[in-house]
Length: 347
Image (cartoon, rainbow, N blue to C red; front, top):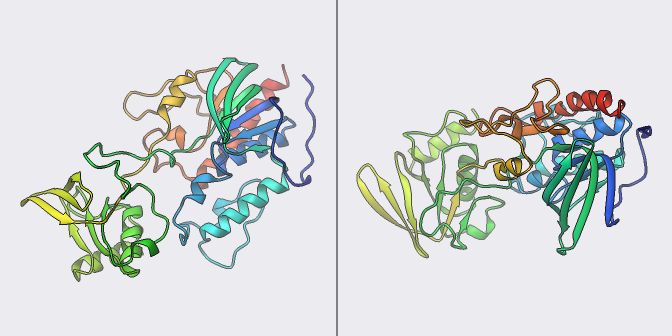
C-alpha cells in the first residue's frame, strides 16, 4: 500500500465528522506521548488519527490550576518543536498552550471527547467502535493501533464507606472553594503534599493522613521541608501510621496507633494515586504481567503480544507509574514509527 508524505506544517486542525473514518494508524490517547506517536507516524508518511475521550492532553488539563512542572521545558518537547518559556520550570498553562500549538503545527487529526468502546479485527484491519460526547456511534478502521492511554483518569480507590460522597475528591484543582473549612488530605507523596500546602496557605484547616511513618521519599526536595515544617509547627495537623476507615457527611473516622479518632470534616482529598486502564488493555487482547501489570511487548518496537497493536507511554510500566514520564515516554513514538515504516511499507 502506497503512503503519502505529510508536510511539516499545515493549516489548523479540524474535528473529524465522518461516520466511518479510515487511517493507516490510529493512536488511542492524545496526551503528550500519544501526540508524539502521531507526529512520528505522520512523519513516516502515514495517515494518522488520534482519539481521546477527553481534550488534547486531558491529564495536564486536570492538573492543579497553578501547578508548575518539576522538570525543565526542553524535557517536555515533542516533534522537535521548542517549548519557549521564561520560567525554569514551566506552568500547567504554558504546557497546555505548547501542546495545542504542536497539534496545530502538525495538523494532527484529533477526535476529542470520543470514547473508544471496543477494538476488533486483526493486524492490517482493525475496527474501532467509539462514541462521541453526544452518545453517537463513531466507527474507525486502521491497519495499526497505538495505545497511549496514560493512567491519570483512573484513581486508586480506598473502598471504604463514604468514599462516594460528593465531598470526596481524587483530584485537586484549586484552593479557593475550601477557605475556612476542615479538610483531610490522604496520602504522603507529591500530590498530597502540594495540595495540603496550597489549601493551608489559602485558609483551609488541613489534616494530613498517611499510612506510613513519614512523608514519602519521592516528595520533591524543595517541597519536603516545607510540608515537614508546617507539620512540626502544628500549622498542618498530621496522623502518620494511620488510615481513614470511614467518611461521613460531617466527619472522618481514622484508625491510628493510639486507637480510633473521629475528626470534624467538610471535604476530603484522597490523593492515593492512579492506575492505567488494565481492563481496556485486556479487552483488546494485551497480556499483562501478573505482578506489575506490565503489557507484554517487544522492548525495541513496543509492539504488544497482539500483532499490529503497540503500547506507548506510562502504560508500558504497568503499575510502576513512576518509571515513565513525559520526559522518556515522548521517545516511544520514534521506536514505534521505525517499526511501522518497515512493516506498513511491506503491506
